[in-house]
Image (cartoon, rainbow, N blue to C red; front, top):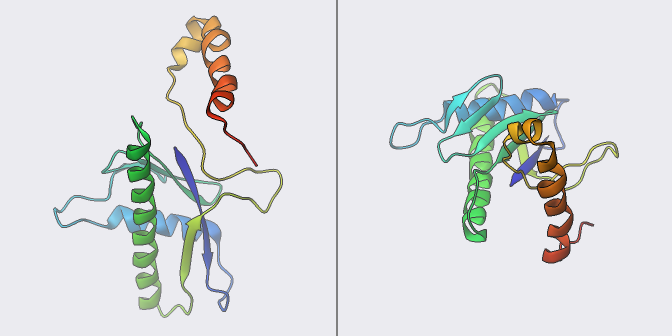
Length: 163
């Protein structure tokens, strides 16, 4: 599962740059070490990395996103989803402390986003599938025979409604 987070700042503040806030949140997590001395983000390159719990974190169109590792059941999915909320809250608190030290008069806020202000984009919580791309190149029938029917039938069988 992947979750996008909206970044904003308190209303009585100066103008700000979304990208700077998003990269600031990423860097806040990258520099944070837990009590065991291990970093929160264990590998990263160009604002795309992996966290110590196996989740992927990256910046996409000025929004921080966290994708959980593959999960075997709904309870496991919920644990990783709540962990992503914790990580983003931790990043917000760290970044706000850094801004306070620089005498900035605003507070950064971050929340899960399931809507988009611009109609050409869709954002929010959605699924991700780990599919070996070689299957699509070698066996062109795989997409037609396996993946597409799965994606069509899954919402029917699970009664998933997209509003």
